[in-house]
Image (cartoon, rainbow, N blue to C red):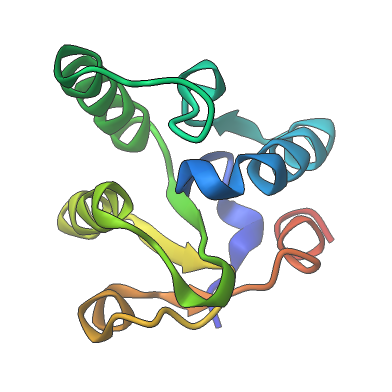
Length: 129
């Protein structure tokens, strides 16, 4: 088990399908004193069309957030991550960041890069007991 109390900055990675959960967790963690970076919720692909140029800009912006973080926390309901989140996981892992997932991932390659599975209900308690 990783000592999550050493995490001061955390990036939440999530498919736009799970933005509601991501927003709730971001608020809880911020209220607990953690610096939290999130996806751009205003570019929810479930609600608006995101152009190729938007996606390029958002991807580079988000990788910068991961670079500034101590760890990432992936919301992966039923093990689903999606392509963009898989890229983010690989990037974080390459930087030596802890890769935390809310559930066991469905994809074996993602599972190989996972530092630990920490449920949505436990993440705030584990970071700030």
